[in-house]
Amino acid sequence: MEHPIEFFSEDVDFSLSNPEQIAAWIADIVERHNHELISLTYIFCSDDYLHNINLEYLDHDTLTDIITFDNADEEGTIEGDIFISIDRIRDNAATHGTAFTDELHRVIIHGVLHLLGFKDKSSEEEAAMRKLEDSSLSLRKF
Image 1 (cartoon, one colour):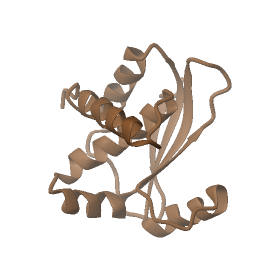
Image 2 (cartoon, rainbow, N blue to C red):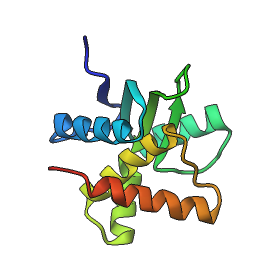
Image 3 (tube, rainbow, N blue to C red):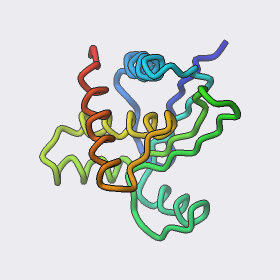
């Protein structure tokens, strides 16, 4: 059986330095939320690539760091595609004064939290999401 978490790059020269450790961390977060991980695909890309997806599928004419597509057919399962702009991650890390890797991991887990059912539209939801991100980041063993 192939690994349920896969990482790809589209139009950027980027690859994770420790994909197995990151995959194990993601799987641990999913398990802690009592969900079953079916499949998860991460696509690392450029601002332009993600902007085109934003326009085509969501009708949003904005730059964003992440777009998450939930493909799960059943409650309690995680199946999705997560697109992440490496350009946005670099810019956001510089803006917030955080390490690129920490910002990348925050966004990686942000997509998973959305698939777990957490929202971030209101300021209360956004604050709760940030706490969940921080909690998840603290569980990294790498």
